[in-house]
Amino acid sequence: MGVFGKKYLTLVLEINKHFEGYVDSYFGPSSIKEKVESSKKKPIPDLKNDVNELINSIPENGKRGRYLEKNLQSIDFTLRMLDGEKFDFYDEIEGLFNIRPRIMDENEILKIREKLKELLPSTKDNNADLYMLYMDWAGKFRLNKKELIEAFGLTLKEVKKRSQEIFKLVEGESVEINYVSNQPWKAYNYFLGNAHSKIDVNIDYPYYAFEIPRIIAHETYPGHHLLLQLREKILYTEKGYLDAAVCTLQSPLNVIAEGSANLAAEIIFPDDELYQWMGKFLLPKLNMPLSKPDELETFYQVLKTVDELQIPGLSFNIVTNTAIKYYNGELNKGEAVDYLQEYGLVSRATASSTMEMIMMPLFRSYMTIYSEGYILVKDYVAKGNCEEQFKNLLTENILPSGL
Image (cartoon, rainbow, N blue to C red; front, side, top):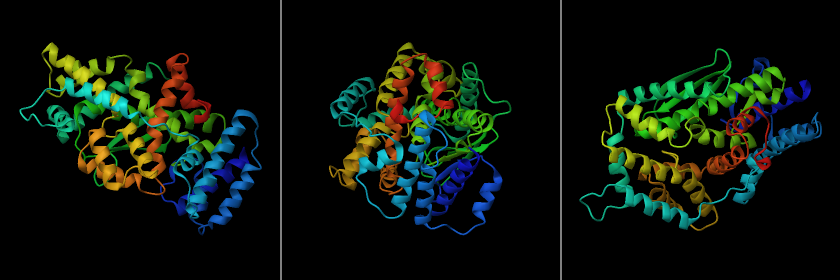
């Protein structure tokens, strides 16, 4: 893997010069990165030739060979986009991520919305729509910055404890949380190598106590941080796969990464444990106790129903629906923003911001992998021992099409 791996790392680092952010994390040899950064930008036609050369020199056959081939085909697709080629939206998603996403049935969405409206306490305004009812209910759990920091600390401790009861963490691994502003996302994992992650949390957004466990589990344990520390240790350090020392924004791996991160909270909080832990531990710690049995039950049922529509802060099924409807001509931009707000239960500002990301040529298809990744991963872990299947996803090179 030596020569092939070095050329692979060099190639993706070169692409990052044309597409800033393409390399999401790099923990390979510093000498390769330094050499690329100190050299002139390589023309895209030359990078295309490098991809073809690597495809024709894949050093392994079988499952490993197919995995490398699909990754190189994804890289080639990125270069074709950078070179100005235009593609059908579905073909673009498949070319980059090895999936063809499904949309959520409109009738199913309507059923969930009706169920949620029945659960939410009514207001004096008889004309209040579902979004207004939901935000009125959610407002009781909104956090100020001090409460947010406390909630993140308590939750990080809990998700790590639960994760290490199931998975063997890398010795010396660690997570650092920072609070930032002026970013389009709510939270982001920057994996720095040596089993260390920096999690940036954007305090410009409103945060609600009930969404913190999913955000933390997604970014840390057993989500992105666990996946990356295990891939670094097992695939890169122990097996010597140099290609595993880089994670690119557009790749089949990210379908697995986002899908497993979206499922992360359900792995360590099976059945109703997540809702129970929040209602009986987290909320009282934040001085938001639900003392009456009916309040707890309503809390559980509302969150279960909302979770069918969205991961809090990012309505991933609704985002996929919106992106596909926009690019197949069913919705214009304004209608798409309306759709996001109405069906995703998000503010107008969040809907508009999400739509801007959907319209970005090099990022638009990424917005669809959260929902499809979640569906694929959830179905995969249900086929056997849930915890073992989940670990396989984190530590093996598995293509989305193989799920």
